[in-house]
Figure: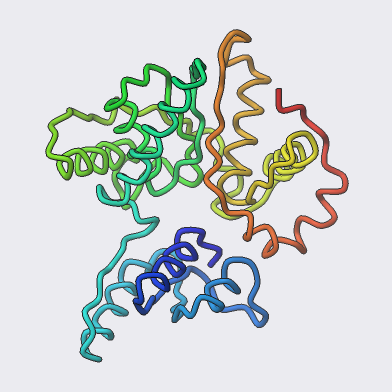
Length: 267
């Protein structure tokens, strides 16, 4: 239920004057917190279901809107469509402009990757602006999405975004660099990797990471650095995708563990 995408969609709906219906995984807690609380502040109507039935529940919510005489627009999980990916395509172009203006060079971009829109958009943006470094996605939960290999889904999303721009750039599953070794105990389950990463980023860089996405991805990055996957001459950029409100939903789990976490330098 701690969906960053849903919370941001609810906020965008307010600005656009639209009613927002959110389908969230899990059971409604007695006391809302984190993104769930913010969803309520933003006036969204919430529907709860188990993680495996989200698509069906979204369609049901859309049908209910139709029955009330409304015109629903269904946004899939994570907003991971070609249209959604264009946001990160533009973000990649913006980053490249900043690097060129500052005379900087990045060899590897590391980013949390889950439903595919973020990495798919970054990959397309990298092609369009001539970025020659790696875009390394840290898979947060699975190597498959809806039964298909995750990299196949990434190529589909990037290809769809490309067509929306009227371009024809070939993407295949091999076009994407994804690390699958950091699923931990499962989606949304916070372990030592995430806790230590959150503590390290906060105590050394003043960065707040979330427990589900950026905490896991940054923990993976620190582990890859320890394993010398990257050379000391490479410049690595960690792409922070937000999500700090979710920290409060994990307060009970994090409170004691963060006190005993080990400090790992970020450089």
